[in-house]
Each structure stands twice: as structure tokens, then as C-alpha cells.
Length: 305
Image (cartoon, rainbow, N blue to C red; front, top):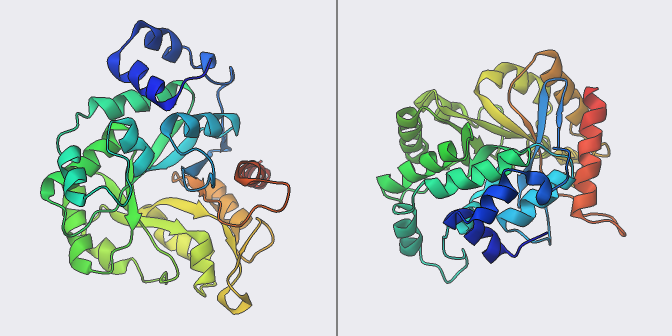
């Protein structure tokens, strides 16, 4: 039996008897066997909904995709998480003030409910991605960290700020909540791009995008991981060519990114941070994003077993 997004939310948030029966037994909604994408100690996850291009992006649909793809962990972006908890649909019509007022008033129990649903289906949420800005009040910063904890995640992720005063402020809240922040970078990534943020707080860390790092022209990805592994919260996995080769996104194994070698390093040195599938290349004709995610998972598994 499946439910619409509205029915799904009502069942969970109102505590109807059906909820107890259904969510105490995830097999009623999902496959009987729980997924397991932890291979020889290395957790492989996926960032959602980003990786599921052109597919439904509500919390229920994403969980179904993740489970049937055999993935047991995820970094979740804010929109589906917040919309599940009752936030207004995040579009151009939603004012920042409206979102702020909603965020500072919503009870954390709604996010705990979602965590339980995902956990019962065999999926652990390890990261929550929400961009903090200089304009947000302190209460909204607290909200971001509280949601991360309510989801059972150990890291708040966001783009690396250009303004060092912003990473300093974020780091102060991270210290207050004793929660790591993983800063993601695109083509501005260099071996020293995170140094200032990391110097501002021991809780300011690195969400390393391996593909972007390579496409930015860096040839020292494995050395960078070895040097900074204590501050890496997670690694985004994608295959891109070196800058001098055009920098394009490629199917895994066809670019210049040392995905296999990075995973084997994580296994060998027993790093605890996860590797996150971030599907960015265009699926070939006859395929789709979900089929390609499954291929990426198989690639990672082969590298680790």
C-alpha cells in the first residue's frame, strides 16, 4: 500500500493507529530487506533530492528510492525535510521572513518523526544541508543545528562562505551545539580553501567534493584527504576530468577523479566519514538518474570489497 504525500504526512504527524502499524513494520511500505551500503567499514550514502533528477522530491518518495536502490544512509537537503514538517513550499513566492518565522516556531518532534521513519526503513540520515546566511537571526541558526540533531545526523552541511565573518559566526554556533559543519566547495576549491574557516572553530570542517576538487585543477586529492581527514565530515563522490582536460562530469571511471583510490584509502585507514554519491553527469540514452545511482553504488562496492 502506498500513500500520497498529504496522507503520508497526516499519518505520521497525527499519530493515527495506522501509523503505528505501518511504521513499526517498514516492509508494509518498503522492501522487506533493509538496505545496506556500508562496505568493509565505509559507509556509502547519497545526497537527496539532488541526485534524483527529474523525480518526485518529497520525503516519502525519496525514501522509497533510496531503499530500493540499496542505500542505507543519506545527506538530506532542507526542502523535502522542511516541507514534511509543514513548511510552505519553497519557491520564489515564499518570502525569507515567512520561512524564518516558520523555522523558529516549528516543534522538533516533527523532524524526530521523520528520522524514525527513515531509520525503521533502514536509512540513517547523517547530514542535513541548509545554507545559513548573514541575514538570518540567531534563532534560525539554532534551528538549523537542532534539526540536524533531531534527524540523528552528525553534520550540518552548506556551501563554503565567501565572507570569513560568516564562517566565524557559524563556527560559534557549531561550538555551542557541539556539531560539525561540513563546508562544500565548487571550483574555488584549493588545498587551502578551508584553512581560515577551520582556524575559526574546531567544529568548522570540510565536505570535500572530490569531483569539483579535481576539476578545479588540483592533483593532490588523496594527499589532501590524508592531511585533513580529521576535519572531513563527508566526501561527495563524482567523476570529473582535470581542468586541463575540460573539467567535464563523466560516468564513474571515465574521468580523472580518484574515486576508487579514495574509497580504498578510507577503507585502509578506517576513516569514519561517509562517501556520498552525488549524481551530476547526464544519464545516457535509455537510462535515468536512479539507474545511474545504482551503477555508482556498484562501482563503490566493487572498490571496497
